[in-house]
Length: 102
Image 1 (tube, rainbow, N blue to C red):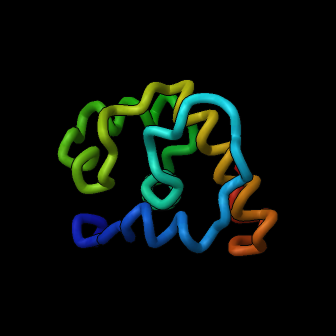
Image 2 (cartoon, one colour):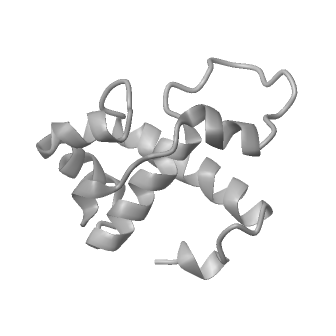
């Protein structure tokens, strides 16, 4: 069941992927681990559009806590983080590219 999914801590995931040295800009508010689990859940539920994913989170605020997100991400943030996580996963060959194709 999706309700029983546990999210690895951000520290556990972030330690497995070395961050870019001294990346400029604001630090990420949402961990890569939380976003990967969120995108996996959305894929399983069949929500492929970022607007639908945002609306689902808005309608299910308990999942914001379960995913260990500090707050509801905006649609733009969901889109931007999807692209960021996609490039990391593909570059590390954790998941095949076909897993992300719509």
